[in-house]
Length: 188
Image (cartoon, rainbow, N blue to C red; front, side, top):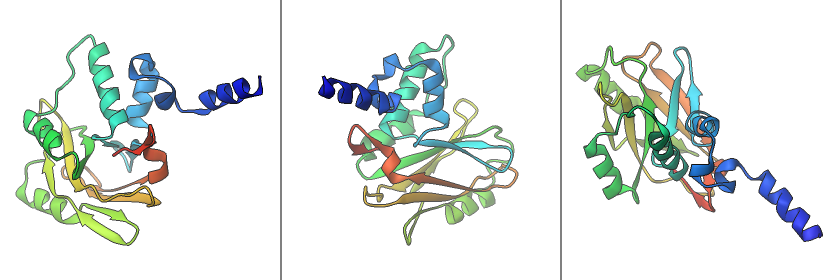
């Protein structure tokens, strides 16, 4: 009897993404996972933007489930991006930022500044982006590619972002590594 109670309490203590498959997640849980979870957060100042780890399995599952449930077609990522992720998933991960407006994008100077100033920081080590996929009218998401250097033993991973075209383009996001474990594996 006591073992059954412990098992029930353990099951109830798990986050929904660990306890149930994606098709059992509510619409509210899908939204939470995609906007406020260990893999996604809003960063300011205004306008707030969502920053999420697009290649983390829970995020990919939530996106897939949201597309399946949607009554209207949701934007699909560019085929070059999906091919890149498929071919480089072992060595690279993607941080994504949906853009509220595409105004001010496309400037060579702004793109150069983004490439120079956007960094990932793990402990005392700093890494620059290894590539990017710019937002487009049909897919308004900036995708930044970083080397897969984060380890389970790291405390956190921080991103110093320069987001061209936004007021106050310098943004900061930090994710706790231990919180990004999904089904026993670090997901980014």
